[in-house]
Length: 453
Ligand code: MEV
Image (cartoon, rainbow, N blue to C red; front, side, top):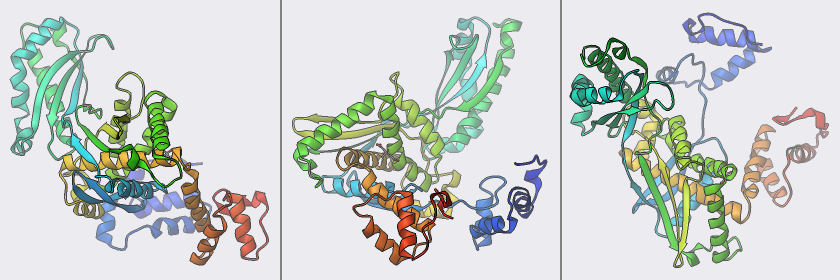
């Protein structure tokens, strides 16, 4: 059980580690060894990582893989993907190769607007507030000129402002809603800084406006914050080919595959249980690119799922159409990504990811991430509607168990062959492994899911 500590953040890194190790582990030396094992020898690089966040004591590695052969709008990409889940990079790469032979992916950014709100309470006549806003709108732009100067030089800035009556949600609740063009940055700090100034302008100008009564002047700013829901920062990616071209070598005909695949998408369009898993598969691809390029995957996830429910019920982010012998499969989702600011210039591996992608701007990165999501979804549905996904997964599962057992490369090769046509449950693998090494087979109770005792 953890005990309360005051001032943990003020301890040095070693102080934090000692406290954690001594208070939480029966073998503190071993715990410290594990934490130190992940430190980088390059002290400068380690310090850089330590300072990305707070109370850092070690690094948490994530595999950084490559899915090559993505042809998007006629340009080839080898896409960096940071993800711990097995089979995702392989499925993306397989879909990329499949579509490379069939003309590749077409992608376009439909819109790039970001949005934020000052949420406030005003207990007065709506018309007075609207008139006040029309009269004072320019002051909101003027008061943020310092903050928006650089963004305006780059062609972005505040696009428009409006007041929205939201009192059906909460008595007196209004929003000052603003749209922004943040160019190649994700723009969270820029947007939030503007919104906080808007809140001050609103309070100040209402307080000196004689059309309001004293009680009407008494507005309450509840909060000022960007919205991670960006239904106007949307990208679309698509693949298409003739139905005959959909032969995939798994034994079923192109027509049968097309019918089953389309049904799988139609089910996900309407059925929330399936839609959630379907979209999770899409986000396997999207998030992996988002993380490798130093973007905020939580923001991307939140927006994607809200978008998936925009028509009133939760459904698939991807869609299919088969018409006149042509199969079309596409995805549309919001992706508020940045290619400047944040981690993009700081994290050496993120910088490498950008170099690898040819240093795309935000729009190009949106197209790449959406395309990987579509490829991932195609790969998952192709497996699910033909061979099932366990075949591929089980091989990785087997390798994970063998790694836990400290198997040598030779042993791994042997067991991959051994389990080719057998079920590789955890206990089966452990038993066979012990047998192979000539060791007594452990009792079931001695076998933990995380490896043999
Ligand atoms: C697993 O991470 C993702 C899948 O479940 C996606 C899907 O079912 O479409 C394979």
